[in-house]
Length: 100
Image (cartoon, rainbow, N blue to C red; front, side, top):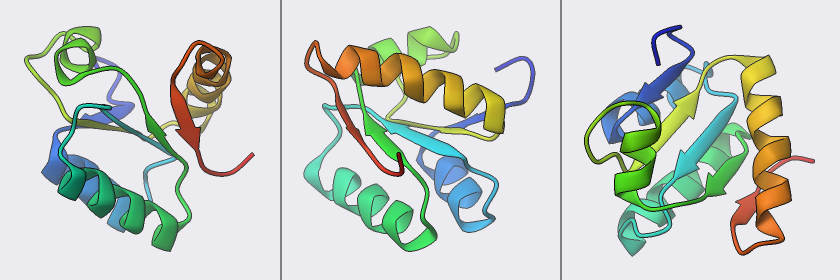
Protein backbone atom coordinates (compact mmCIF):
# COMPACT_ATOMS: atom_id res chain seq x y z
CA UNK A 1 0.00 0.00 0.00
CA UNK A 2 2.77 2.43 0.93
CA UNK A 3 4.50 1.90 -2.42
CA UNK A 4 1.39 3.03 -4.31
CA UNK A 5 1.21 -0.25 -6.21
CA UNK A 6 -2.35 -1.06 -5.30
CA UNK A 7 -5.78 0.49 -5.08
CA UNK A 8 -8.35 -0.59 -2.53
CA UNK A 9 -12.09 -0.29 -2.27
CA UNK A 10 -14.74 -0.85 -4.89
CA UNK A 11 -14.59 2.58 -6.54
CA UNK A 12 -10.78 2.78 -6.76
CA UNK A 13 -10.52 -0.83 -7.96
CA UNK A 14 -13.15 -0.29 -10.66
CA UNK A 15 -11.40 2.91 -11.75
CA UNK A 16 -8.06 1.08 -12.07
CA UNK A 17 -9.72 -1.59 -14.23
CA UNK A 18 -11.32 1.03 -16.51
CA UNK A 19 -8.08 3.02 -16.81
CA UNK A 20 -6.22 -0.21 -17.64
CA UNK A 21 -3.77 0.27 -14.77
CA UNK A 22 -4.86 -2.90 -12.94
CA UNK A 23 -2.78 -6.02 -13.59
CA UNK A 24 -4.63 -8.17 -11.05
CA UNK A 25 -7.87 -7.76 -9.11
CA UNK A 26 -8.49 -9.50 -5.80
CA UNK A 27 -12.08 -9.73 -4.55
CA UNK A 28 -13.00 -11.21 -1.19
CA UNK A 29 -14.80 -14.54 -1.29
CA UNK A 30 -17.49 -13.17 1.02
CA UNK A 31 -18.35 -10.24 -1.25
CA UNK A 32 -21.98 -10.08 -2.35
CA UNK A 33 -23.03 -11.97 -5.48
CA UNK A 34 -23.71 -8.65 -7.20
CA UNK A 35 -20.21 -7.34 -6.38
CA UNK A 36 -18.57 -10.59 -7.51
CA UNK A 37 -20.48 -10.50 -10.81
CA UNK A 38 -19.75 -6.81 -11.36
CA UNK A 39 -15.99 -7.31 -10.94
CA UNK A 40 -16.00 -10.57 -12.92
CA UNK A 41 -17.77 -8.93 -15.85
CA UNK A 42 -15.57 -5.82 -15.81
CA UNK A 43 -12.34 -7.85 -15.54
CA UNK A 44 -13.44 -10.14 -18.36
CA UNK A 45 -14.25 -7.15 -20.58
CA UNK A 46 -10.90 -5.44 -19.87
CA UNK A 47 -8.96 -8.75 -19.85
CA UNK A 48 -7.71 -8.33 -16.26
CA UNK A 49 -7.03 -11.47 -14.18
CA UNK A 50 -9.29 -11.74 -11.13
CA UNK A 51 -8.84 -13.73 -7.93
CA UNK A 52 -11.48 -14.49 -5.31
CA UNK A 53 -9.55 -14.90 -2.10
CA UNK A 54 -9.93 -14.47 1.65
CA UNK A 55 -12.58 -12.44 3.40
CA UNK A 56 -13.17 -8.70 3.61
CA UNK A 57 -11.53 -8.39 7.00
CA UNK A 58 -8.34 -10.25 6.00
CA UNK A 59 -7.99 -8.25 2.77
CA UNK A 60 -8.17 -5.01 4.70
CA UNK A 61 -5.83 -6.27 7.40
CA UNK A 62 -3.29 -7.37 4.78
CA UNK A 63 -2.91 -3.77 3.61
CA UNK A 64 -3.22 -2.11 7.00
CA UNK A 65 -6.76 -0.83 6.47
CA UNK A 66 -10.26 -1.64 7.65
CA UNK A 67 -12.55 -4.03 5.82
CA UNK A 68 -11.95 -4.12 2.03
CA UNK A 69 -13.96 -5.99 -0.59
CA UNK A 70 -11.55 -5.50 -3.47
CA UNK A 71 -7.97 -4.65 -4.34
CA UNK A 72 -6.36 -3.75 -7.67
CA UNK A 73 -2.66 -4.45 -8.07
CA UNK A 74 -1.20 -1.77 -10.36
CA UNK A 75 2.37 -3.10 -10.62
CA UNK A 76 3.10 -5.89 -13.11
CA UNK A 77 5.88 -7.57 -11.11
CA UNK A 78 3.90 -7.52 -7.87
CA UNK A 79 0.80 -8.85 -9.63
CA UNK A 80 2.72 -11.78 -11.14
CA UNK A 81 4.28 -12.63 -7.78
CA UNK A 82 0.92 -12.49 -6.01
CA UNK A 83 -0.75 -14.61 -8.69
CA UNK A 84 1.90 -17.31 -8.32
CA UNK A 85 1.46 -17.32 -4.55
CA UNK A 86 -2.32 -17.32 -4.81
CA UNK A 87 -2.24 -20.16 -7.35
CA UNK A 88 -0.31 -22.18 -4.79
CA UNK A 89 -3.04 -21.34 -2.26
CA UNK A 90 -5.72 -22.47 -4.75
CA UNK A 91 -4.76 -26.03 -3.95
CA UNK A 92 -5.84 -25.23 -0.41
CA UNK A 93 -9.23 -23.89 -1.46
CA UNK A 94 -8.81 -20.42 -3.02
CA UNK A 95 -10.46 -19.60 -6.35
CA UNK A 96 -8.18 -18.06 -8.98
CA UNK A 97 -9.42 -17.05 -12.45
CA UNK A 98 -7.90 -15.14 -15.33
CA UNK A 99 -4.99 -15.33 -17.72
CA UNK A 100 -2.34 -18.02 -17.31
